[in-house]
Length: 149
Image 1 (cartoon, rainbow, N blue to C red):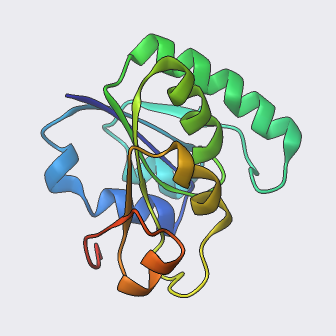
Image 2 (cartoon, rainbow, N blue to C red):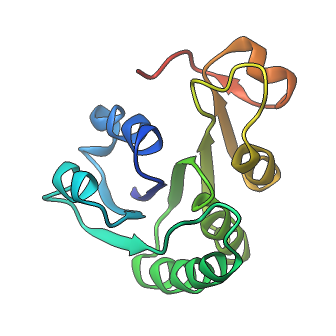
C-alpha cells in the first residue's frame, strides 16, 4: 500500500511521526511545511513542501489545491492520512475527486471542541479517528483508537 501523509508542522506532524511502526513499512511520501525542524524530522523521507501559512489563507489554500492535484496524480497513493490542520483540506478534497481513500486523525488536545479541519474533513473521510470518547460527540461515526502519543 502506498500512503501520503499530510500534516502541518508541530503537534500535527508529531502525531503522524508517532505512528512510525505503521508507516515505516509502507511506500510513502509526505506533504508538510518546509521548516528546519520538519526537514530534520523527515530527513530521509520523500517530501512535497506545501505553502504556508494555511489557516484562513485563501491564496495558499488555492496553491495547496493545485499542489495536491500534482502530488496525487504523480504519487497515486492508495490512502491519504492526515492529522490536520488546514493543509489537509485541499488534499482531502482532491482525493475525493480522484477516488483516493482518506483517513483523518483528530487532535489529541481538542477533547470537547472539534477542530475546524476536523469538521471540514469529516464528511470527506473514509475513516475518521479520534483519541477521546468525548470527541465522538462531534464525530459520531468516528473510531476511537485512544491516545497515539
